[in-house]
Length: 207
Ligand code: GAR
Image (cartoon, rainbow, N blue to C red; front, top):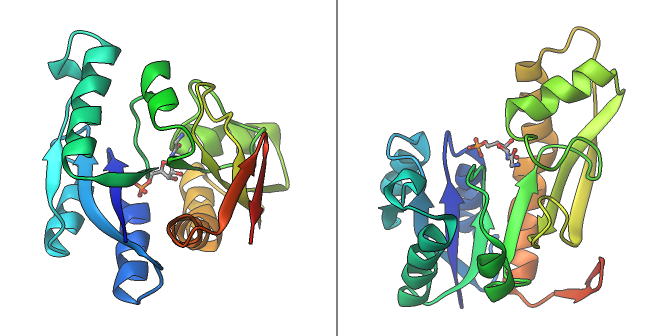
């Protein structure tokens, strides 16, 4: 059984999708053992508490450097025997040292079809604002392993979602979550824990 840590910063709807999947028996060989929030006021913490999942708050501001922050996070994850780290709306960029130490053991969900609308500055609603400003007809979500390059790690799964006439960033965000993120992320986490994913350079195969 793989112990999963879910890192959050906000509303935590992706965390909720993981909790729901776990409660429905859809996370094979994995269990959410810890939720870490970078924000003490994140609603995600309430979702975790309601599901009886242990929580911790690690604020970036409480540390002088990104490396000191990542060192504390690393120590916490090791203490809890974590085997998979899931970034579910986690808004703090983790330093290279952390990404290397946890190579192929960190999964992120991003609300666009990478390599569109990704990288530094593209997070949360900003991603959907950029997609609408460009006028794309199709967007979506990507679940990928985390590397030192922001949103640049090997892609596990992607799903396209239609943009509709009159969409606002909020309506588009909601559709991308419902039709892509909340489906892809629990599936990828289950695939990882069940040992179904193999990484070959940029390509991830699913057995
Ligand atoms: C989600 O749309 C997630 O894909 C995005 O933030 C939102 C968090 O919502 N993540 C990023 O933009 C990371 N670059 P949630 O807290 O309700 O899961």
